[in-house]
Length: 100
Image (tube, rainbow, N blue to C red; front, side):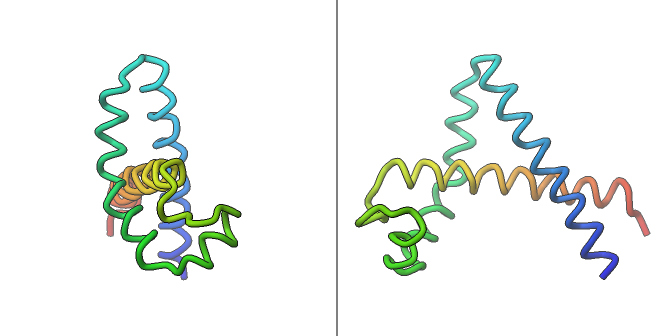
């Protein structure tokens, strides 16, 4: 239980740092790097749109035929990319702070 709490705290911090990095990239105007970040989230976003049923997406978003909606795909790829960066940062924080 303690390990789960430590990892949750590190993941929360990692997600906050990932969002701050995204804001910094937007502020500096490095949109090519943001596009590259979005490319890393596209496979997971496409997989989630294919695997989860259409009824789930229409209930969640209110959009009919949500799997074909480009705005939803873009948002999911951004969330997946930020999640991946947050997870990598969380693993680094765990290694840094909780070495056993």
